[in-house]
Image (spheres, rainbow, N blue to C red):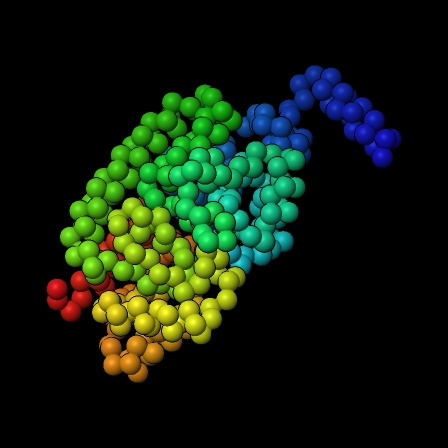
Length: 319
Ligand SMILES: [Zn+2]
């Protein structure tokens, strides 16, 4: 072990002394944060696309972002592939959500932290602003709170600026433009959802991804599963939800693109048996975004899709 350390120090000294040695040829060039390839974009890897797509917009052509988790992928259950590990190894910067969203990747992140800039952007937010469940777990689905997600994206932007100071102004300008669009979306969503009568503002979904969404727009949120899709759905959860739907005459319930639809279907069938026709309000993007190249494949587009789908579902059947 000791000999290895001495050897690597020696080889470092030799490399360091080689006149004209281009460190971009060295396999460690990307890990030291001193990449000489100024013309090539900074290689950023993210887990969820709710981080990746906005950071590609903010990073512009100076950054190349790869998101490991595409449409329909559930981050709670996600297991990294060999290909993912390779992609993470090649990255200069890694951004992930944290707060246990990517529950099976903790060990990988700790390893990457030893080698390169690896940041859990949601964990930069003051915990006092976060939602907490009855078991004391912090809710990781921060991207549904536009203000808090700005804080998380701001953290990621600061990391980029520090990594590449010559591009700091460029990143900052892009961020300001992007944040203005987020503010506009928030205004639009508030106007739209506040026009739904208060007693109809109940959002029933497969798992508890919409807590921040509910807090932001004053909507009661009922998730059949807890904060993670690893949680079990009990028959009693389904029955309690059916009872609530009947009591409050909820017109629609919603499925999520990254979660199995069975539990929501069971609720619809149960309500029907009890004499209430509850509709499927449509598909929401909770933990994964839509297909790349579509509106829903962007963070702002998928958010807008959810606002419109929730509005349509909850105002269905007249008021
Ligand atoms: Zn989730």
